[in-house]
Amino acid sequence: MVGERVISDTEQSNESEEILKNFLYENKELEHLEDIVDHFNIFVALDIKDNELKHSVFLSWLLDPSETHGLGDYFLKIFLRKPLSKPPKLK
Image (cartoon, rainbow, N blue to C red; front, top):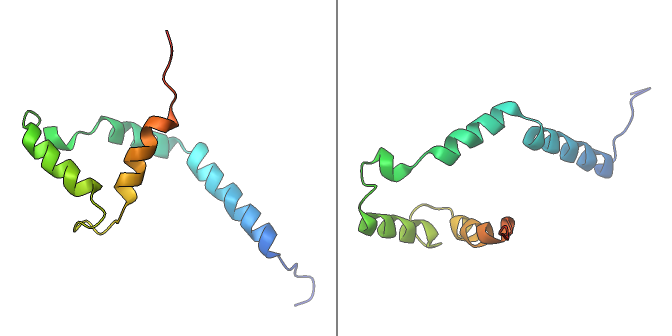
């Protein structure tokens, strides 16, 4: 393979990281989808927005790594990180 350039693992990793950054930070469609998801409320969709007991049961199921959703501690980690991601604004 004369003239072909061999890409090192580091170069491949840097290129992959750059592609991922462009997808995450410069993607209008993804930003639009995030806006939709931010406003979606499963409790309103299920017409149980005023039923706190069902909210608690659902949240308990979601935050329990051993539950049947099969995502382990994914939701629990996100839930615990959320308060730390945006420092409160002081007045």
